[in-house]
Length: 195
Image 1 (cartoon, rainbow, N blue to C red):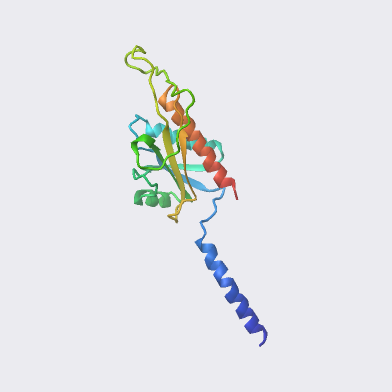
Image 2: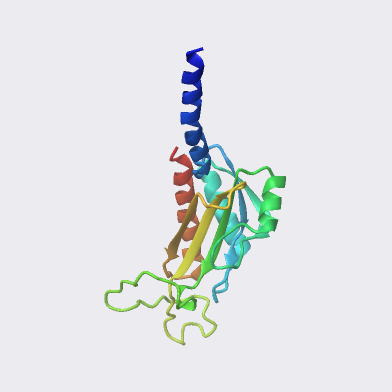
């Protein structure tokens, strides 16, 4: 009979730990399947979002991560969150995670907190080969675009990863976005391999 109170006390003392562990966001696993929502472009720049989505998927596959591309798109809301379409489609495809990606012009959101840009010697122009005036209009100045992305477990609303990277201007607008998709893939891959 003396063991019963001891076991009862042990059970009662471990119950809060079990409850506390459920409140923590689940750690990503490297062998997980990720559903990628189509990239959303809320900037004024012309972007072929299907090309960006395909590049992101290709880069993730290159990192040995299971990927499925969804038909549903990333939300156009400033704060990334899975839409009901994202949730339904990811469950039907039996994915463990949803990856949302959004291309944003930081200057279009003047009231959002932003990092101050560092510029030495002013902004360098980039010559755009697709200039309809054949380069006679002078150099084309481009601002950086912001790539916001978030990784969610399919059964949670709190992101496992929620961050922003800058796509620096280069000779052609899509080139810097393609390299940004590669950087996003590397960041997601690193997050999945942490534990």
